[in-house]
Image (cartoon, rainbow, N blue to C red; front, side):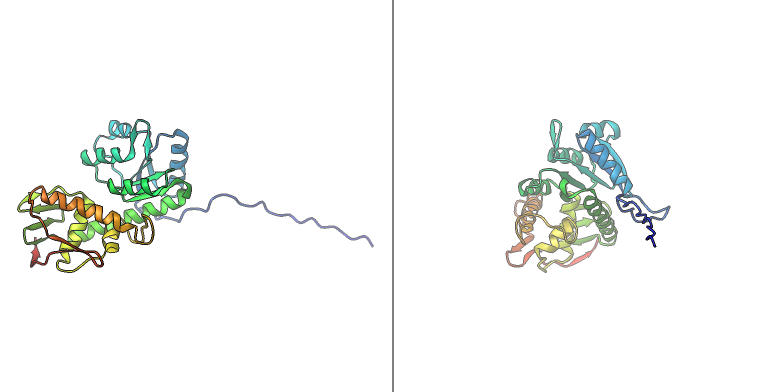
Length: 269
């Protein structure tokens, strides 16, 4: 009796990327400004970020951003490449801050060496992501940064304080030394607030670094490479205070423990 052959139908593999998490209709979508001078990459990156749940505006240069939006990019986070036509990313960060644009900046670049990473973080960026790691990794980092920013803002609203000659106005992120506005960046303000709110207590390098970036962020060489970034940041903060008081010595350091603000009685500002 002949054997009856049956045909097995195999469904084609679904190679489409995993769908993004479902979002409530009224949930805030993170707004990203993406600056990259590679037209094809910019288009592809924006499309993938939008698929992953972000709202994206793209520009081929910093000047294009300024021309289109002036000093108000209306973004939650700014993503930019290191080399942008005739300008460099760190120079653009300085221009953004000078124009009053305070949104956190993330470098997304094909130059993943620690030299570039340290330079990016020293100029005020909050993260540095290698393009080779892909858009899903960038998307996760952006969500963590925006969440950290939101939580930090909520904390600051509750914690204006005065300690010795220092007054911290949390609602505007301003540090006053003898009534002089020291001119701290938002990152620098957060670090001073952290130290002053724990005056007399050493705050370890990792805690300061998490305040600058976000918990679990890794940068620098080796397990303790982030300490170099913390030292550079503290040096910049000290120099800003010393512009108003050459004898400023409130931020103390003990290498094995970290940094502390000298102990004074503090009161709500």
